[in-house]
Each structure stands twice: as C-alpha cells, then as structure tokens.
Length: 404
Ligand code: AMP
Ligand code: ZN
Ligand code: ZN
Image (cartoon, rainbow, N blue to C red; front, top):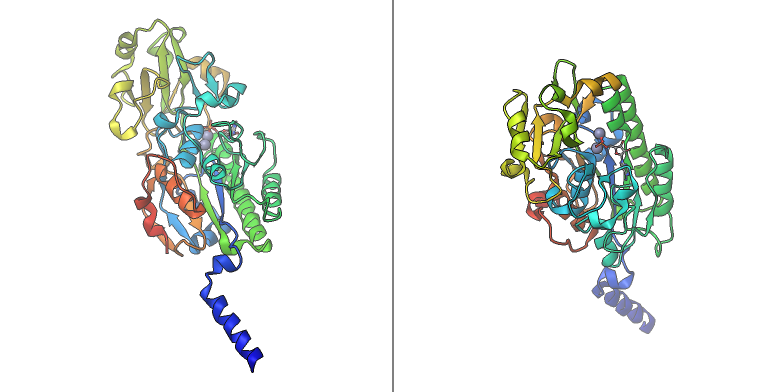
C-alpha cells in the first residue's frame, strides 16, 4: 500500500514538472534551402513533387518579392539579415567602395574581406546565442563576419555536386546532439544556371528543377530517418526570378556613350555606371531619355520604394531596363551571344518574383499566402529558431499569420 502511494506521489510530481525540466527538449532545427533563380511560377510549371508535399504540410507564398537589385549576393544576404542591400552593404555582385582599395567581386578573394559585410547574418546571431550553425554554402558564409564563422562550413565550389551537398548537410545533422547544428543552410545553383543558359521554358530548366526537387526529397527523408522531424523546420526560398531575353530587346549602350569613359560594374538586366572623369551630370544627359526601354536615374532620384539610395557603394548612375531587355554592347555580343535569361530588374516585375515554401511543427499546414517582401523572411527564421533577432528592416507581423 505504502509502495503504491509512493508511485502515485512520484507520478503526480512528474506531471507537475514542466516537460523541459524533466528532459531538456532538443533545440529546434532550422534548415534554410536556397534554389537560386527559382522563379515563383516554376512551382506550378515544373514537376516538383517534394516541394509540393512540403507546401501541403506548410506555408506557400504566391511569390517572394526580392530586394533591389534582383541579384544573387544582395538577396541572399537580405534573406539572412532582414536588411535591404543599401543597409547590409552587399549592393551588387560586383561593386566598388571609395573607402576600399579593391573592387568587390562575388567570385574573387576580395569578397572574403569582412569590411564589405555590414550586417550580422543569422548564423552569427545564432552562434552568439549559444547555438551551432552549419552552412552548406551561402553568400557570406565563408567570411569571418564580426570575427565569427559558421561552426561548420565549406568554401564555395560550384563543381561540388548537388548530391554531395545533400550528403554533407545530412552528415552534419547526424552528429551527436551536443555537436549538431541547429541552423543549417543549403544552397543550390543549378536552376539559375539553366535559366541563364537555356531559358525559363527549356527542358534543361525542367531537368535542373527536378534534380533540386529530388535533393529536397532526400533532405526531408534524411531528417525523418534521423528522427529529427518533430522539431525541424524547413524553409525553401530563392533569391530572384528570371526574365527571358531576346535579340529584339537589346539596348546597345555603345550607340549612346563611349564605353571607355565609364566604369560599368553591372550590366545586362541592370546598368550600374560611374563616369571615369567624375562628371555625373554629363553621363546622365547622354543616357537619360535616350532609349524608351531603359530608365536612367541618378542615385538620389531612385524611387524610394527600392530602398536603394544611401550607400556610397551605389554608383551615381543606375539604369533599369524594362523586363526582358538587355543592356549590352555590340562588342560584348560579338564576343559572347546573348544569354537566354537574366535578372537584376525592378523587383515589381512578376518575372523577378522568387520562391517561398516553409513547413515545421509551429507553422500552419496547407496555407497559401500572397507574395511578400524578402526582408521579412529573417524575422520568421529567428522565430523558428527561437533566437532573438538583431535590428533589421523586416517585420515579424508580416509572417505572424504563418504560425499555428
Ligand atoms: P548571378 O550572377 O546573380 O546569377 O549569380 C549566380 C551565381 O552565383 C551562381 O552561378 C553561383 O555559382 C554563384 N555563387 C553562389 N554562391 C556563391 C558563393 N558563396 N561564392 C561565389 N559564388 C557564388
Ligand atoms: Zn541568384
Ligand atoms: Zn543568375
């Protein structure tokens, strides 16, 4: 009798103690996946059963509106900082800063200098708050930002196979709990490359998308196999969309200006130009209003909705071509034929809209939401990871309705 009473007492006590104190709950796991250049409408256009399955048990946005300019480095860094490019400092894939000795190029050693990266990315915040973070590639992840690198990371290598990226990501998740990362990014470039080289309607694009969808399926299955599903959230995003190009939509810059007189840091789906002689007004007069499909602005005249003015890295002359138009030159086209697709344009173009699908134990199931701006993704990621966000341009209220 006394024995039974002791058991009852022990049971009553156990029920009164919160679950977290009985056995420490494992920290939530967040996997952030980027399908570079996956345009919003590919979701409905290309077979992607694993992405659809994730959307069915989570939240799918009709589009994710990139920040201007709709380029890879600026938008990947916005996704993990919640800041507009003019605020986080990565205003383009290629740029100059009057205070820096060399120009930044995403594919060069110069990109490794932490002085370019002026905002704290999610993985650094997570580490500062006692978590481990792993990056299977992400722009900025190879840089010691604020002196902190991801706990586990790899130097970027485009030839590192998709299957190997998946295997490495799962190997990190398979580490014992005391070493396992709670934040993990996984980056894939195949769809962007196919969009540029073969176009948005090409069989190559469909094949690349199917390949990435497979990779997602393997990641999801791996998480389940490791028994992590109950406390893992998976967020799949892209950085921008893709516009089809045509030789019928080309602005020949060399018919308007002498190209040797300007420093062009971006061209194609955008024009970033600095006059070598410093005469901004003269360059503006030579370009402004000279082509009906190329809007030319001085930096300070850019529409405020683009949030792209107050940073000395922004060149003094910006050209924004109409959707699907290319800013290039006769010489460039003689050296290399026009790509099939480009991005960079005004994010208001439907073709620039990106991907957002997220599922996890705290997210609603089967929810379809309208397109929203990608500065708001960071607050959502911090909430999924249970960490305190640092100051940023996004608002948690924008994604509050995504939660149960
Ligand atoms: P974009 O020119 O904006 O289309 O950039 C896309 C390219 O960025 C892809 O082809 C990738 O190979 C490249 N890329 C992505 N992440 C990195 C990185 N961390 N370092 C260097 N290049 C990268
Ligand atoms: Zn990209
Ligand atoms: Zn691209």
